[in-house]
Amino acid sequence: MTRLWIRHETRSTERRAPVSPADARALVAAGVGITVEDSPQRVFATSDYRAAGCAVAEAGSWVDAPDDVVVVGLKELPDGGPLRHRHIYFGHAYKGQAGAGELLARFAEGGGVLMDLEYLTDDAGRRLAAFGYWAGYVGAALAVLHLRGALTTPLAPTSREALDAALAEPGAPMTALVVGALGRCGRGARDALVRAGVTPTEWDVAETADLDRPALLRHDVLVNAVLSTAPIPPFVTSADLDNPDRLLRVLSDVTCDVTSECNVLPVNDALTSWEAPTRELRGGARPVDVIAIDNLPSLLPVEAGLSFSADLAPHLVDLDSAPWRRATALFRSAVKENAHA
Ligand SMILES: NC(=O)c1ccc[n+]([C@@H]2O[C@H](COP(=O)([O-])OP(=O)(O)OC[C@H]3O[C@@H](n4cnc5c(N)ncnc54)[C@H](O)[C@@H]3O)[C@@H](O)[C@H]2O)c1
Image 1 (spheres, protein in one colour):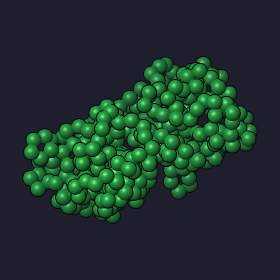
Image 2 (image 1 turned 135 degrees about the horizontal axis):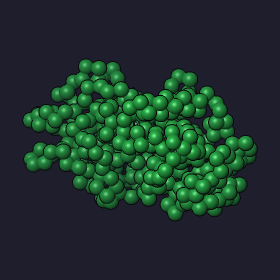
Image 3 (image 1 turned 30 degrees about the vertical axis):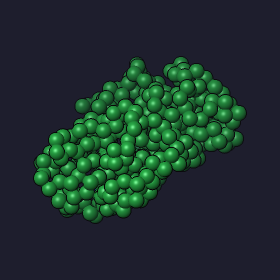
Image 4 (image 1 turned 120 degrees about the horizontal axis):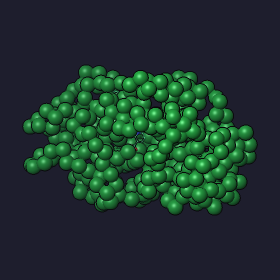
């Protein structure tokens, strides 16, 4: 029998969960055993999981859980020693990100396995469960609100209704470009911009093959929603920021590949946060700011949590299916490469 252990998230701002109580109920009915760690910040009540037939454990107790449980979460694990369980979450460990080598070494040392949610794909390579839509939606919304001077900090989780009401407030006209417009984040970004009364320019692979830099710089807002798996020439360079014809004022980097070799916006090399969502890249009379928040969907935790759980839960019944086997194989080759690095 599959035994899942849904962990409390380490990051205090992370209110989402990978599986909702309603989907947990369906999994339990399908014969999956589920333990849910109590969590002070999770958007779904622990009592709802209990009512759905899940056992409840203390926050962080997965470290002492039996070897055969599969630990399920979303974002980073707490620092610590060797990892001996199978873990399902977003490890961000295969693109040379900061800390990736150390994480893979912890798995190698403990004999555990990372079944990375980013690489859970169907036979055609399409992601099976992703938060992209709401990430793009919030990423574009923050850019609009910032440009209008209507961003209140620190950011806090909200509802779509409240966010849409803020976007519907009248503001000065602006232009916006979404790159990666055909993807999940891109679609969310486009919808948020339309909600704000902005008709976005939409670029995907075809439009960036021969990048029209002057056209890019003529937009007030750039939302980067590209999924890059190998380094490509940057979309915005330092010289672009110094270009006197630049209109670009806000870069919203939904991708957040800021420490990766795949960073297409190398003018920025650091994340921003809920406390300080924007950072100035150029000041003075022609400022330009960046937004690079890597947990955007957490700002709409209910909408994001429910849609992600609906996608993921059906795949948690059988962890030996082809998608999980592919994700595991990828992990094993990353560990091997890391050992030789
Ligand atoms: N910041 C956050 O909180 C957050 C949340 C979810 C996802 N993400 C990240 O956002 C990125 C996009 O995720 P997604 O789910 O939307 O991916 P996706 O695969 O659905 O979409 C990516 C899009 O980028 C396009 N693309 C790829 N290369 C391109 C290029 N050179 N030029 C133009 N377009 C290109 C693809 O054709 C596709 O349409 C990922 O890196 C993901 O990790 C961030």
